[in-house]
Amino acid sequence: LLTGLRIAWKAQGQVFGSFRLLLGSPSGLRVECTLTSSAAASFLFRCSLPVVCALSVAFVYLAARIAAYLTPTARAFTGVEAQNTLGQVLHTVFICIAVLVVQPLRCYYHPNGKSSMSAYPQVLCWESTEHIVIVIAGVLLGTLFLIPFMAACVWSM
Image (tube, rainbow, N blue to C red; front, side, top):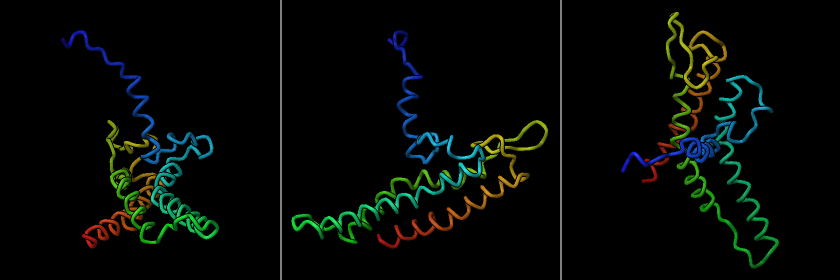
């Protein structure tokens, strides 16, 4: 039964490759050419995911308010609904951001005793200024997004 089973992994990889956009990867948006080849720039771009989500919800909220003002039959998008939508969107990307926060700490060792980041092998851990920038961005993202978001979720229960 299993000997006749053939799985085209490349086709499967192409399907799952589209999820890179949800992970905030620049390759999911095909913007690598516009960004520098710097690992720090790529990481900072990925760190902007919560801000992009918040700005997107704010834009939809404002557009709905303007549409409700201009069209009497349109229903306004209330502030509570906007907060709920933002909470749901951020809850959806929470795991991706949590993984992103610990990425600067995931290093593998070389035979020469040095170590590189798993996500960006060209960056030497704890030796390059680029890694320090990435670590600071990860700590800030954890401090300014993960901890407050978890506290808000626990508080709202």
